[in-house]
Image 1 (cartoon, protein in one colour):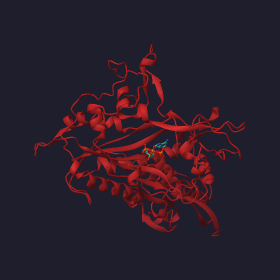
Image 2 (image 1 turned 60 degrees about the vertical axis):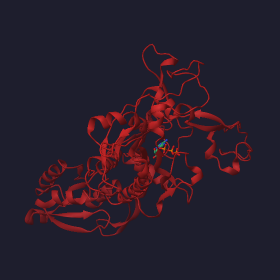
Image 3 (image 1 turned 180 degrees about the horizontal axis):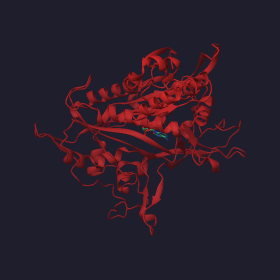
Image 4 (image 1 turned 90 degrees about the vertical axis):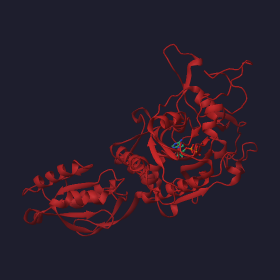
Length: 486
Ligand code: ATP
């Protein structure tokens, strides 16, 4: 699979553009075009429907230890700075970076992106374009974007753009429990923008500085957290598979014990073999982590004790050093049936909407051959999106622009448009119209032809099998509806 071809199709057909392109672009920032926005919305809506809105609160889903509830949340991007102090991001959310001193390179690299044979402490080969290199000592770089609140604000009014949506959920745990009558086990879900000042944004949207996350914090009894971890790990893997990311390019990778945080029973990454990675390498789409009671406990008590850093609205102790204090609020949970009080454990499935959309674009890209109007086989580019995710669900063509065909086609177009995104196209030979739709992944094309006018049926052509069947005009809306909902 050729990444350059995918990138060029994305731009040509309006899936993705470089942000601020007319000014030369901005590294690490991407805009979604008319088709890209539909694709990403479909992905986020599928997630929300399957995980939250369509979740069955009262039945036990396959593999789940018991029934559970799911609710949603939408928190602000800028939060009280103490949140980031307590979560550890203020002190610890750093990447180690090195600079190359070599003239003509002057590259900046993340230490963990340099192969170990090219250790920056014993440099032998520059990860840039040079044989010889001279790398600086690694130093910390905090990935949070900083901003100032208020017109007269100074450094003491500094705040941060959230690097993850998760913290908004933890700090609202009590609000949600007190206001919505839900009981543990319960998942709280959020989709939203996150920001990380990545040292080396690259690989198209894979590593961006502004991106969207789809996160669940699932709160459960500590004694059941291992079972819930296994449940979520398997459920999330299956979800990606059901959207069409199946086969050998998708991998569930369980972290080794020595990779885990001290509070964690397990973490698994769901990874995809993106075509820009070297053969055999995978990139993370989603992390599913067992987080114990670390987050709720930190927001109650504050546990971190890193070395003192300059104060940013962060509370100071008598010695003038920052106090790593939690909110002081009680974030424990009392089970009203057993009367037991405990600090719930958390399982966190944290997925990237942009990486998900990118994996779906890569997986969908195919080149094969299809007959043209003269019946000769021609190479075609076809995006084989799952119908649920496809930006345009169907295209409607009158075979010719006469004999009343456009009128019938337009009427059908309007009936379908009320339900989902569809396109009407009457320009050029039908073969070329099919080709245009194949390239944007439209699963079904409907052609109004001479026969339609006599027997009220239309041709329904399937993007993947190229099979053509005749469907009654009156049944088309329900037929397409049923095919795209699966
Ligand atoms: P990586 O190791 O690739 O930097 P991470 O382990 O830091 O990723 P998490 O903190 O677990 O990522 O974030 C959860 C999800 O958010 C990731 O699985 C990914 O899909 C998405 N994500 C994280 N950073 C970025 C980014 N810079 N650009 C796009 N998506 C991202």
